[in-house]
Image (cartoon, rainbow, N blue to C red; front, top):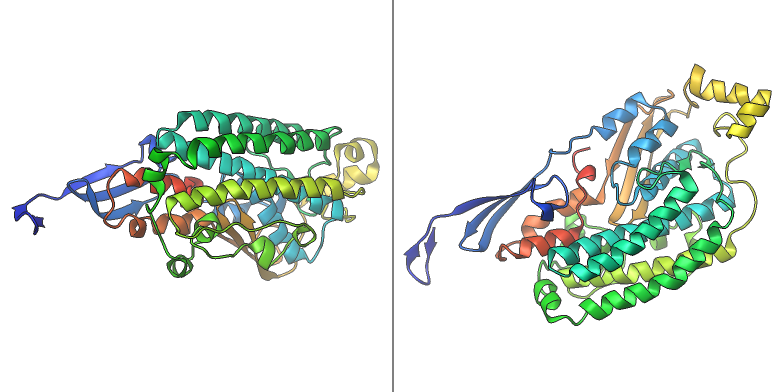
Length: 398
């Protein structure tokens, strides 16, 4: 290569960033071409975490596939569970009881907070703000205790069921949620004090990885990355599902579409999620958490062990035929997960397993825009930009 200003001839350096580098946050590889420390070209590579989730759907029944959705974005598995169950329920043309809808909203929002905590915490540690990571990681552990309490697992939750939930909220759960919602804002305030006006943080994030609103729409970006570019779009508002239309919350947007704005949007989204959870707890109705259709609903263990009807339905679902039979047809359903729009396109041929499932994950779209954001940037900016996109490898090669 030739530096026209200095009249010097230099060689182009090809650098492999990942897939083992800790700042890639997973098995991601970026092949970079450098002129000095300026990135000339970036080629994102994926395929190091090939899972075959979509193909697995063809060999599992609809309830079994819920366990597979946990592994897509493993930072917010409850949101994946909800997205898939809503798609199947749309295919079946059923609506879950109101209590189950409120519980799903609560689970979706605390899972959103958990995802953002990890995203900002890892971004902070990548840029040297270790104290912020410790603050946020402690709050994440509190949420993981809540996940474990309600479904028995901290990471791969599988809490949703077609037509409802695995089980109702345990006794005392609502009080613990209220306590978390009361204490969490203090931690967010501490983080803002540490970062918002920190010269090093601002220098590493402001005007870095910028993208305009028009470009973001053309690239298919969603979630905090889109909203940071001053585009007011959130599926919870524009196409409400569950009971979001009954709850009051705001959609934060940025101005510059840079790394700093993406950080601010995620911070504000956590505050709004706390607001949603508090309202949902206050409005939480009584009643069942499953539809009254034993051919679809998985019977609970008390019914299986103590009633003949429960044992028969359990046998029909799990032993004999492996699940219910949906009608022939196809549906697309999307939800607002922490990283953006998560969509499920399901094709049914009338069998007990889907004929085809196609997933629209937000991380795939965000990973493809990384070269555009890195144009002419320094090598050190790669860490900040990639962390702000929060790319999850499990969503890429499905």
